[in-house]
Image 1 (tube, helix red, strand yellow):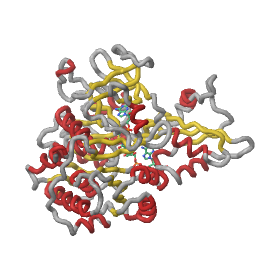
Image 2 (image 1 turned 90 degrees about the vertical axis):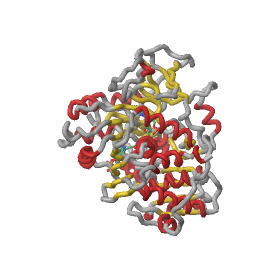
Image 3 (image 1 turned 60 degrees about the vertical axis):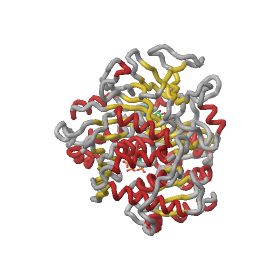
Image 4 (image 1 turned 90 degrees about the horizontal axis):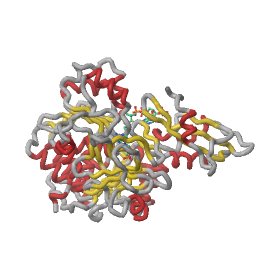
Length: 513
Ligand code: MLC
Ligand code: AMP
């Protein structure tokens, strides 16, 4: 039924005031809610005119723009499944996603049409459109001929709305399938929990191909009918300048670190703001405190994943479930959100008492439907009683606050992007002269954590760290490239012969200090 279509719920929030401003961009453009509604109708009608089945995958790799948001919303409106792809991904990475997902439609930047269409047609995609960040491209040219009236396509709560690819510790990336109800239930909970109210204005500073920018930030503003100040690429000076007319900001920790580097960040500049939210990576306590000292605002940290959307949050207001506590505690990710059950288990699979560290498992209406065409992987990640194993390691204290202390998955989070060492090691190990490699995460003042590669050459072979980095740059998304590559004679191993990455991390921990 159409009321289960996420778009119908978002639209209901802005239909009341179609003439007011929906989005103002850093490029000087302004869109009303009527503009957004008409544009989504036209693109939805274009999708509807194609000979593709309901719930087709629409894969999209385009630069951030308001029209890219229109395409996302139109995909929902037309009853299809949105599949966003990071613009940093290169052709080998895209080839895997498109071949795996078999989208009916691919939309790419005009400059990438050549190689992208080759990959798409090989994978059986029938339609490839282009969309530039300056309102150019075949998608809008074709949509311009379509009606601006469109009835939202009916969807059930468990029908898919989006597929988000997330890398894995081993093997290839997995497509996390998120339903309309996964996303809508989470958006509704956050609307209440973060106190969204009339007059709120969001500074949208994040990319729109991952959970944080696409769902948490965008749905928050849409569901509240709130204006967005739209930044194509994060610029700390612009963000600070906008704070005089905004109320809500969401960012990964790197954005906060970069704003703290600006002298314009003051109490006065942030006086109009209501709420600063951080997530996607651990917020250092130094950043949390420095922000408090400079602005008088306490950042609210929350925790989530592609597979689950948001799971926990520090309180915005008194949380009656936890004795009315209101404190936003640095270093913690707060309480499980209403509707989310969270437990911490030991290695023996038994629930741990308060304060003890173990694997975090979660359940709730926001938890995804499984990995696209990977039933075995899906089964592995769920317990018999239906909890999802996050791969994060943490604890819950006596007051109910959750702290993430580490990860059981071998994962580096760099500037809010996930980098799986196994993927990078695979590429390095395939290079001539390389016997073995280990990629580790080390602390970095800007990105929080960055990758460093340690490589052993084959006997007699000569390999060069800089050349390895250059070769990786030609194949992989830029944020995955290790910032340094060392060539060494051997790697530290335990008695089982397994590489001891903890020792490597310790050895290189001050590299960027
Ligand atoms: C860019 N570079 C990075 C990087 N981003 N290196 C490591 N980690 C990153 N995240 C490198 C580039 O390769 C380049 O290197 C150099 O830095 C400058 O590139 P840039 O493009 O100019 O960087 P910039 O635009 O400043 O990007 C930095 C950033 C961006 C922090 C603004 O990474 C970003 O927007 N991060 C947000 C990610 C995000 O939205 N995550 C949410 C995931 S959802 P060189 O060598 O080529 O010069 C999720 C769930 C949840 O996790 O809970 O929210
Ligand atoms: P992704 O695969 O991009 O969805 O990344 C999800 C992962 O990001 C989680 O499993 C956590 O490891 C990490 N993460 C998200 N938010 C936080 C946070 N506030 N603190 C620490 N880690 C976080």
